[in-house]
Image (cartoon, rainbow, N blue to C red; front, side):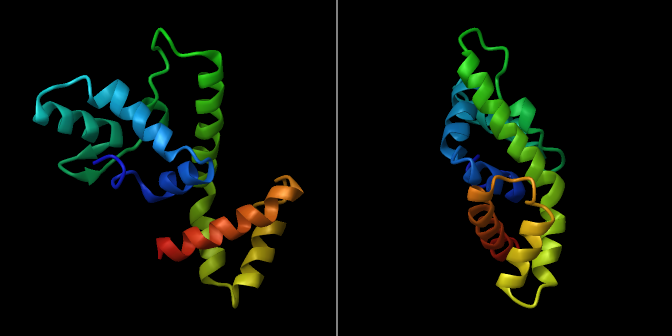
Amino acid sequence: MVRNRVPKVVDFALKWCKAKQRWIDHVYDHFINIYVDKNERKRAAHAVLGLHKGRPINFDFHKSIFWDHFDITDDEVEYWEYVEGWVDWFRSYFIYMNDVYMNSESEEECKNKLKTSFLKNTEESERDKLANFIIDCCKNYN
């Protein structure tokens, strides 16, 4: 239920970080699997995903991580903060990057525009890879 209902832009960020399965496991372990009753599990999943009556209203990635758990390590906190940074970045810029994609004559033009605007502060070794990933995301978004 969680895998297919996460907002698309958050899904892109999780995939970029190669964190989607780990996030899903975390959500199930800490928020959903604690209930036995099927309806309670469904309600918990909807709460984590920010759904109301099956419709998205307000997904908050920060609230989907169980930060206060007694056995969360400093490494895990650092990892989830890293992932959250990418989620925030994708949520802030994806709509604009998608607009660049939609208004570009070619993928190469789009890639160049992305690299010189949204990705100019990204490490050069990652810039091409991220631009290609974003273009693939835009193809799946539209």
